[in-house]
Image 1 (cartoon, rainbow, N blue to C red):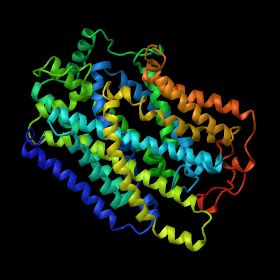
Image 2 (image 1 turned 90 degrees about the vertical axis):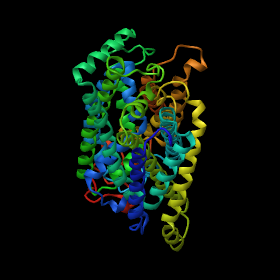
Image 3 (image 1 turned 30 degrees about the vertical axis):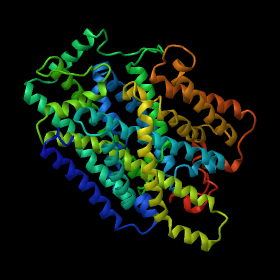
Image 4 (image 1 turned 90 degrees about the horizontal axis):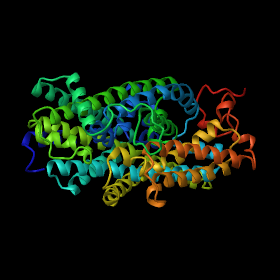
Amino acid sequence: MIIALAWQDHLVIALYLAAVIGIGWYSARRQKSGDEFFLASRSLPWWAVGISIMATLMSSLTYLSEPGEVWKSGVTNLLGKLLAIALELYLVLYLLIPFLMRFRFTSAYEYLEYRFNLIARRLGAALFCILMITWLGFVVLSVARSLTHASGMPLYAVIATVGVIGTVSTAAGGLRAVIWTEVAQFSLMLGGCVITIGYIVWATHSGLGDWVRASNDFLANSGQASVRWANIDPFARTSVLTVAISMFVWNLVTHIGNQMMVQRYFSLSDARAARRSFLLAQVFHVLIAVLLTITGLAIVYYYSAGPGRLSLNPLTEADLVFPHFMVEVLPPGLTGAVLAAVLAAAMSMMDSGVNALATVISVERRSWNRGDSLQQKQASRGTEVSFARVITISAGTLITLAAFVLEPITRDGNILELLPRTFNLFVVPMGGLFLLGIFVPCCNGRAAVVAAFAGLAASFNIAYAHLLYDVPKVSFTWVLPCTLGVMLIVALLMSLLGRPEERRLRGLTWSRRHQRPEIDESLIAPGVTKNA
């Protein structure tokens, strides 16, 4: 990379990294309590949180895979995502967010103890930690792999840059630094798409219609349909319907069970602000998904019908085409800007995930110290920020190491296919615990824990059936919905053996949300009724 990039590109990237460090340093000056570090004192503006939610969902995995996926399936993935967003809007906006905002938890997994038992809480927190380490390791690896191939930058240098700067900034500034850094990072991601699209329009004097025709021609020549609408064959790679179902399940369990997401809602003052943040995030979600797909269509046109000659195989190396285009085609300065956007996408996940990990582990530490005296608890709270910073640095180190461990495991296959077969194996068992708790009142703690382990076994077996049982490869789009189905069936069967206690239902399920829960009064949000 030192040789491949011009000084203008290095300058742009250096300015971006300096801005990230500056935001972390500025936010660190306000760190005086655990509440400020973990939740920014619940005082963040809703619009900043909304942009942060979008930046968290839009990792470098999506940023690199979406343009590449156009070579394989045209606009199929985009249409599936848009359908999933339409399906999830009501559930998240009017069911999940109002339910969550009735509590003043710091960690989402506190809910699982009140609704089920301590084992369910520990299991949910453990699944989240495993998910974050593997997910963020894959995020860092995907950036390192892409930039190494496209620009010559050493793999270890990219991993070190993203890992060290993201970790240090988060350790210093806490959630406030994460939110404001992600606002800047999202702006860069958006700008990266606009720069690429604008350059191809200027260089080729073409437009969207030309790009769509070029994509359809490429798919037809490759023996593929331009849009696959509804194919429920479990061995067919994708269709609009199966992508929509898979993304719907992922969004549902992520919004209710992933601390990275839930923590953003908890940082707001009330449910109204949380709803506005979610709606803004969805608007930007649609915008960036459309822009990334248009970026992919433009690049397909540039290399298949325009002046470019692609030295990669877009069907087997689709994820590398976008970064390859950045370095090979864009002029100095613009290359650095788009590469900074890729780094921003990775670091937005890095700082969000590391902060969420520190929050969960710190809150779990509180629960281990319940037997301490009041004086001991106050002393522990006084060291909470220092402890969280140590956890942040440790988590960043583990994530960086995970990137190296995952490299040989994820070498074959493109990013979109690998997501449900790697770290997303844990996302449904984790989020499914919350869905069972909220919407299945007959489910007790034992049933929930057994269902979560059954979901883990199901996700692993479905994802790797082609390796374990010598059968055709099941489409990655079926891993998540089938796992959730298994969890629901097992939970209902196990619930026949016993019902939950009354105190684990009052105010803790959707059907009894109007009742006041029997939990610590300080954890009940203002406005929750005494009884119904």
